[in-house]
Amino acid sequence: MKNETKTVKEIKQEFERLIEKNKFGSAFSNIKKLLSDDEDRGEIVSLTAQWKATEKDNRKNNISRDDYRREINLVRDSFIQFVNELEADDLDLREHEKETIQEEILVVCKEERKVIMEKFFSTYYFKNIEYLTFEEGISNIAGCDLVILDMNYFTLGRGAPYPQEEYAILEETLQQSKSTNAHFLYFGSSHIPDELTKRFADIAYFSNSVFSLYARIKEMLEFRKYYQD
Image (cartoon, rainbow, N blue to C red):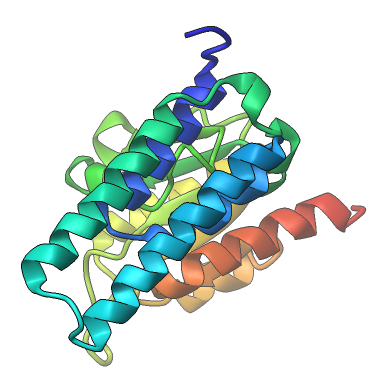
């Protein structure tokens, strides 16, 4: 297939992933924004209408479970075929670029947590994401815009001291971030110790849940973009 660039492949993979997870609404609305041809957009509008009609019949018990699954699979198969036939010329890649994050982001985490953290950072959206594990050592993070440290694998009880090993990793990552002019995002349910918060208040931010993680990333990157030091 001509013009099968890395970007086009990633776009196709993302929409196939959405459909596999039964996220039809997101898949249809998102791909329609990327299509450059009215005829292609019309095909997605038709598939959307077919999907909505099937879901409505299912909610009102106007269709058997077997017929429902059959109709949904028809919509799924038609959409996957549509996506597979797309080429670069069919897409407005400028619209895709508006949704992506181009800044250099480094995720620092335990080796066993890497596969979990990768789920948060789809390469469809995060174009320059790298990973460094504790086991590899916290060093040489120059060139990053944002360092994200994953400490979301433990919770401290009231008054409990911060674990010594994790404290050393946290302090070293903060120092490395500051020395290389990167900003730092702490991801964990237990707060950064007060003494480190005070020492690194000019670069460090905090996210204590998966729901706030993306918002904090966006806020920090916008700060880097607009703030003149």
